[in-house]
Structure formats: C-alpha cells, structure tokens
Image (cartoon, rainbow, N blue to C red; front, side, top):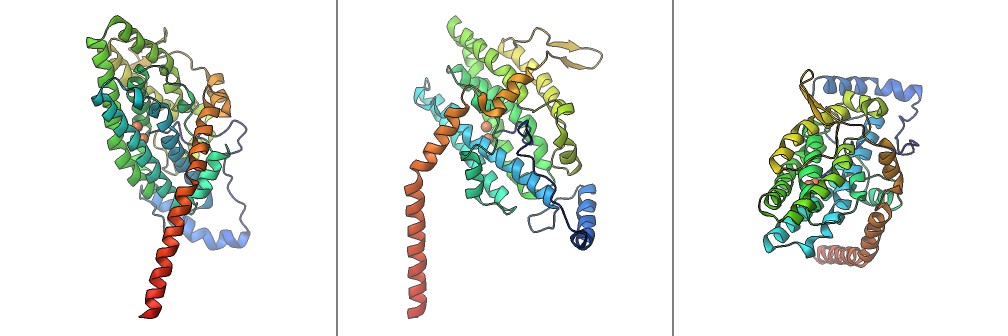
Length: 345
Ligand SMILES: [Fe+2]
Ligand SMILES: [Fe+2]
C-alpha cells in the first residue's frame, strides 16, 4: 500500500540519515562520480543498483523503501482481522486476495531495498525494535465491516495518489517495483468503493449508518497519510531534488481531496469536515485544519493500536523462527550433497 510521505521521521529526528562526513581525499576522488550522478538526475535518468550514488541518497532510499515495505506488511493486520468475518464468500475471496497482494508488495519492496546493500534481517530488526517507522494509518482500529470498504476507498486511494509519482522515482529498482504495486492498488481501491456502494445502494439504514461512521473515523487519518505540511517537511526538498519524490505532501493531499469529494457524492456519504467546500477562484477544494498533534502522537508510538501492531509482528517473527531454521538447514544439506557429488565425480 502505502506511503505516508515515506520520508516521515520521528519528531526528534532520530531516524534521519545524516550525510556522512567525507575526507578531502574522498571528496576529490568522488568528484567525477558525483558529477555524473548529478547530470543523470538533472537529465531525469534512472539510477541503477550498480551505479555510483552518494551515501546520503542511498541512506534516504533505504529508509523510505524499508518504511514502505514495513507499511505493506503491518498494513495486512487491520484487514486480516476481518477475513474470518467477511459477510459473503465473494467478499472473503476479495479481501483475502487483497491482503495477499499487500504481502507481495512488502516482499517486492524489501527486495528493492536490499539492492542498496541493507539486509532484510537488518530492516526487520529495525521494525521489531521500534526504530523503523511504518505508515501511521495502520495504528487505527478496524471496528466494523464498513472499515474494509473505507480502507480500500480512502487508504488505498491515498496510497495510489502517493505511489503513482514513485513509478518515476530516480532509483530504478524502486520505480519498477512501484509500477506493479500501483496496478494492484487500483484493484484495492475499486473493491473498497464497490463494497461501500453496494451497502449505500442496497443496504439497510443501519448499514448506511455504519458506512458513514467508518468514513467519519478514517477521513482525517487518510489526509495525514500524505505526511506533514510542506513547511514542516524539511526532507522533502532534498528528496525532490534527487527525483525520489515528485510532488510535495500538500500538493498530493490536495489532489486526493479533490478526487474523493466527487466519489463521496456518488456514494452518498459526507466527509466529517464543515470547512470542506469548493473554492471557485483556486479551482480546488478548501478543507479544515488537520490535527497535527494527533499525527505526531501516532507517529511517536502513542496511537490507538501501535503496541498491538508491533506486538503482532514480533510474535509472528518469533513463531516463524522454526520455519526459517528448517529452510536454512535444508539448503545447507542440499549444498553439502552437491559438494559431495562434485568430489565423487
Ligand atoms: Fe500495497
Ligand atoms: Fe493496497
């Protein structure tokens, strides 16, 4: 799924990779490489894993792609919770397929991050120890079946808005992964919208109320998925210069609001924002103030489900240890057999 401006860092700045200090000799030796890199970025070319890149660019990408991968994997939890309670076989099959897609996105993204020289074990250790971030949207609870529809419509919808520009990210392995991910995200958004439309068109008054309640709870956290306002997002400028980020947090948020207001009208739901209205002069929607205190609280680990989500991931990792051990023992045995056969031949 999901970036919440994947360059979001803790407010204390702990997770921010610093540009490493270089000696004068290093800088001299790297000057032509740096020039070639800058020229490629300026020309809009892609950077491949084997190409030289500045350490700060590499670290920024590792942080962003690993945060993104963690978000896909943690993002399976709030929806996985509803697979056994889906109302029909059709809805169950769709939800199961969607949650499996998210697992695939996570694995693709871990693989993309590994091309930058960071191991999967290192990334998972950072997640499990609480050092790495993932999208805060998954720290909210899923209280009703309508939440499944609203997550598809709004959360996957916001993810698409964030991720389509990443298909043109300057780092080619990330851009390639995003092309495939975005195709699947479209299905996620549509299935959510369709589930809501069914309830709003053919549902009982109680079901319609359930949809409106889910919209009320998810609207503001969805807007927070685009990350802090541009003025409070100091990393964005560097990321945009490097072509990692193509549009600013606020620009993406505005595009999302403008697109979803129309869709809400079709559904017959209301956004929980009395200030939301069309601005004829700017040709876009004005909307109310986002509660940034809540955003930073959730990013800082104090959201409604932060502990539950991380606890579930750590438990799954610990309980899967025997599978990883068995797979490693099997591959060692295979390798030993091949070596013995080669000696015998
Ligand atoms: Fe995804
Ligand atoms: Fe998704």
